[in-house]
Image 1 (cartoon, one colour):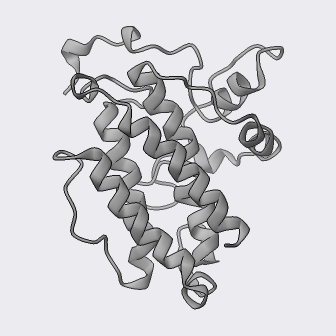
Image 2: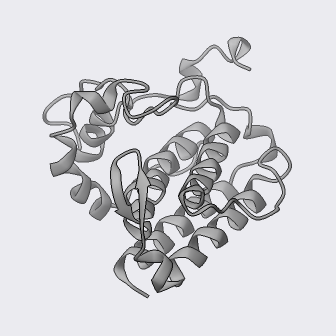
Length: 202
């Protein structure tokens, strides 16, 4: 297994563990993502797995929907992407993406694999789980996040419906590194579900 596939596997394991730990009554909890509840966060990750397949003319395998069984939906989508990474000819082939031409494995690594780290925090925070991000992930993200092009914070700039990063949330310079990373990623590290009027959410 190469580095990209191994990294994806670790991130997918961590995300799956968070999905599995959500209680049935928590799926409608608000999340740090505006307009998304906990179930929507998983739905986004499943959809992004599908987006890794679409440049190859493929789609997600038949599986329970996120509405029916969030964990089963994720496990199935994960298997589809891992099949791409396991096929070296497919993994090394180039595809067109909103960020330009990338190999399939680069596309997975830079998009859905990385997405699971941030959205794992969203899901954990929404459902009262341990939301500590692996320090090695935080340290790896920090240098690049300080140079995010403003274009990537503009909804739709990379294509219809594509939102990469929200507006930066200012946090103190001496805050823990995870907090500073979350702020650059458009998250308020102090956010809690109680901050949202749940009666106004769908």
